[in-house]
Image (cartoon, rainbow, N blue to C red; front, side, top):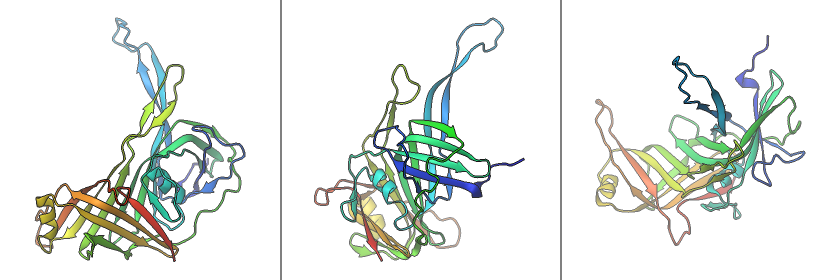
Length: 301
């Protein structure tokens, strides 16, 4: 008996011209990933009939949803289309800014061991996160919401475009600039985009008719070795600052720039005899001069 295994898992995607409509004869692109939980779920509607025997007599299936995460190692030129979707914007040359253009995609998961495919349509990027640690590769996650799904025994595209083959990026080749100055004491950094989508269901269909975005919320956290009171003082005084996180790899670099941030916390607990760290969660604010609360600049090597 053959079972599906993770090492034979494939993931391809293609932009949709119309929300939820799988393109005919699509030219798919392979997507590098370290984990994938994209899937379909259906709500259960339990009858409230009083039966006299304490037992459930009717259970119907209700609203259908598609959701899940795609985990990946940030690699130059491998995720530009999905990064643009997370920003809800288009690349202006080599720069992305937060916008209001919501593209949708069809994803196809392939289970090579058992010759099965799962197609997930009407998918949008609801959230994006980036995690930087000194001892790890630059790790990212796209959180996806979608409209519908189906199964097939053949792939939509038997020969998808290969994904970028550059090495993943690491934290050793990057930099952190805070308030206009290089910050060399950062132990970890997190960045998050939350597009706050809501599903819109209507009578006559179990699938959502639309995925409606809310306000973009940009947030993150710096964890720094506690060297002096400079950053702690910015939090205590409610002083705005700026932040640029740059990560680099064999193909080029990405610079995530936040022109206005406000620290919303500053924890520096003692947990033993080792060095102390200062945890600084922050929220990004819209900057009128930059025209965005977050921009992304790509630079080929």
